[in-house]
Image 1 (cartoon, rainbow, N blue to C red):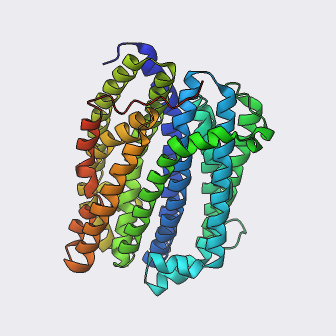
Image 2 (image 1 turned 45 degrees about the vertical axis):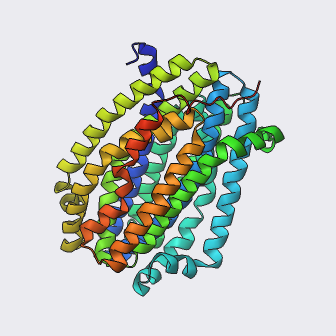
Length: 450
């Protein structure tokens, strides 16, 4: 274990705002779900399917931004702010281009997108207006994600607090007014929820823009820098950062394919999945925030060339995450009965009963999830070992999770709790691979240039 108090202070300084920001974001989604659940299982399921498409987009841009953290955190260790600004430009341009493609796809082929996710005609019809509107929020979301990711890597973390709080209050207020038609506003149902999302994302971007260019001092960046991307760093990003983006994209595709499988099951199963993943994500947000801190500190130590420090940091982070995993898993298990009953009283009894079973299974997988996330997303990614992570995720997702999930639903016709387990079966063994990988030194790779 590292004895230097500065290590724990640095980890907390980066992770605490990220945890709060993640918690607020998940809370935002949960409040949306609770409000929309009062409109019935069909509408609730429709929003869930659209949110799966949104989650795919968020995962892809998160991968592009996460890929840049490999370079930015190590350049931050060398205090090369010029290179960091160039990487910033690369990622911002990629995220905005991807958002434009996604919005165009949704507006030109909305029914085709939804038909890929579910074969239920009533769910497709309910989801159509929501999908087209909410896709417009992808544009400000793409730039905001790029900004927050870059600033975290240079240890500017307070901005995530400001943006999350602003987005939360705007989204909750507009949801209440527009979904239910309060204080003279029209009752717009799911369309109101989509408009609230667009407004909150736009407000989030404005706050981030102001903070990045006028408030923070760690990174001397100007708006014009977003147009200046160095050709050499484009190649470096393609070599070291893009594998992270590809990993997260492939994993997001696995998630989308799982949504397609789930979409062929009953509305009750879909609703139960939404309830379950909501609570599990609240648990994961704390481990995810710690991986952000782990990635920055590991990358910074590699950039400084202090490999002994890197190994000490790695060992300590792994021990910390085992404890965090046990705490999160225990919390989810204890809340498995209260959570569906208290927060989703308007959802069918069948869906709530299923969610209780799913949460018990999900709690058991969270221990392994938390540990391997600390390794793959925090330690390996910060140390430049992104290609290995890409290989593991490809094998686990495409050759194990999806085939077993497909067989469980369409061939074996397994009980629904078994199907749920197959959807998360990789979380039961990836922690072993992560542990073995970090026993040697092959995972430490300095990717910076002089």
